[in-house]
Length: 481
Image (cartoon, rainbow, N blue to C red; front, side):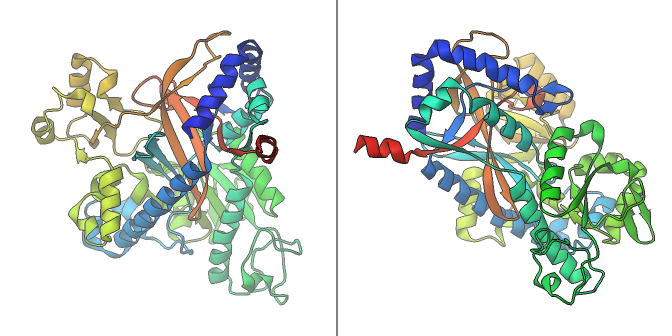
């Protein structure tokens, strides 16, 4: 992997004038693209992150292992009231988590963020993003921008560079989960929602492929969120993918949904068969008074909600503390325990006692503090980013108030070029973070971001990199022989 990325940088340096033009063209492409976050174009770096086949397989196995563990944690929460007591959830949220989902997949979608050392393949998990996992569209757009660059064309003379596809692949897995839900709720009833097309592309359930099941309509899926927090252009890409697969798809403000006659409905009164929930749980609970129709539908299992509230069990950052707890190790294998000890950083509740016990005011660079349930790196403070006074203030302000203290993992650094701030930038080193997308238990691709601070996110001037799989091209291998 290191060889691949160093070779790409070597090409850029050797053909720097050509790549200055390409770099500025890529920035212009992104400014006019659909990769928009909170009204601003997503800032990207010029050099992509290229993953070798062995790195890709290693990360796929890492994703498989942690997902198996997270599934066990969710299952134990659902069936063990004593284990539930470890989590900081209100009674109302607990009831939503324990409500019927109608399908067996415990974690339908996730982006697992890690600090990945590209030299020795060691890594530490940073966070687990569930239903609100995003950034698929910005990866798609930066790949489009980079594909016309000078360096990309030169690199393709030696390697096949393949981007990851995040839209159609998610819809396929969504349809599989929906099929299970449908088969349970409508066991071969003639009015069961399903696709009208002959190959049943939107539903794969054998019961609904039965000729005796009369297809009445396309199933309607609603992509829902609080639109002030949404990534609407990304939703449009998913809408297109759903429609291509045989769904009727709508994008809906979650506050405007209706509940009537036992049905969850769109704002204009049409029945919703399935929900792709992008509204994160912390936003839902803060705005619960405004979304009672949606919550009623969830309680009554009136629509297939993907993902269900049980994903909050691992989305809340307190799970990092619980993953290393004795109560969790009790139901894990020895290999799973060792995996967590290697890859889950030490995590504690940020209490006055822990502040004193760990002496974190004197060792600020070893620690990071995070809120249990916010996103986009809001409220996150890495000791390396602050002087002593600012760190002490942050620690004291956050103590005993639903914050976590976590061992800081020094990110892996790589060189790159940022054409957003300069038409002719110099190579500088950036901290890297890697996201692993998992759809319906299947590894689906990689997302890359970098930044100059200890906290790497769009909210804190993080920059996206195009993620690619690189393998020696057949023509290059033939020419070498």
